[in-house]
Image 1: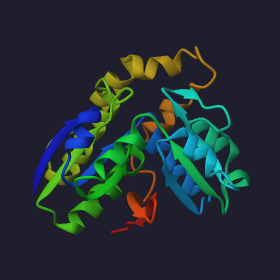
Image 2: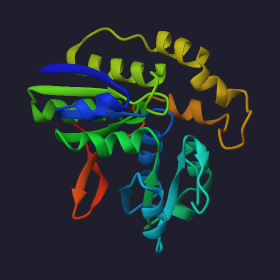
Image 3: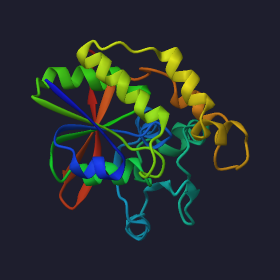
Image 4: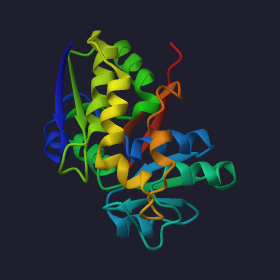
Length: 232
């Protein structure tokens, strides 16, 4: 098994084989929570106008460059999703838009065998699913800050998944120290902006909370995040 490490928008566009797109803060920490709270379908869409046009009875969750989108129900926050819980999501379709994770996953679909959507919350299940597929090539793509600048949480999550696949050493305490000291976490912890809740990093940095992974998959004209159970 060859493991290729890539980053940012260019990485998502160049990735081949089974592609793991990582967005820890916060898209792919939100998506497993949406399924946990009973979402029936999860549609990935990068175009804001298309999201709004598809609304119907769906719940719109997302952001644009971290800022809440007018007309959407919720921003891209795990803590906000947890606060609403099943009362909002049970049995509903969710349309999800984010600047890094969702757009990166959509780009990665062009040249990949499969696209998996990962964070620390689903890392082990993602790695176990990959091993069951016995692929020749894995591309791990850390989406970073607005897909333009590397972010430690995504790079370290990539390290963790790589360690689960290959046995390469990984130190989560070292990862936490680097992540929490960086501006990508500090902008939440300072509480400067109401749409960046202080609670989000503590949720996003939990490892292996869920025994399923998510796969981006074309369904007609749409792309859905499909839940794949793994209890291995």
